[in-house]
Amino acid sequence: MMRTKAMMTIQSGFDMKIFYLNRTEDESGVSGTGRVAQGFIFDNGKVAVTWLSEHPSVTVYDNIGEVHAIHGHGGKTEVIMDPDYKKAFGELKSSIENFNLSEVVKEKIPVDGHASKLMSKN
Image (tube, rainbow, N blue to C red; front, side, top):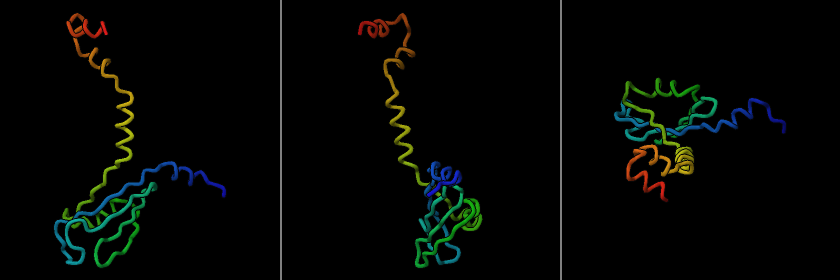
């Protein structure tokens, strides 16, 4: 199979995000309140939403703004993004691996102080 440049760009992005819709008031009496739907924002910006009710339809939208405009009900339904734990873990791991406590301490203590003299002996 030959890959096109567009396919490779989308596949290399891996920016798909997960969200849910949290509704505080159900105007229609159909979907209920609380966590009423979940969805994905794909790398290309398209959005898929499925309802967590007796009517579990799936709809695709051009962008997250459309979802908010159609289902927001004047602030009664909020789009809540799920945290990207894998990305956050990678960033934390990277910062820990590159962290050197003695360098940080040396930058903070006075050069002529007792602590500096003790650190230079070790």
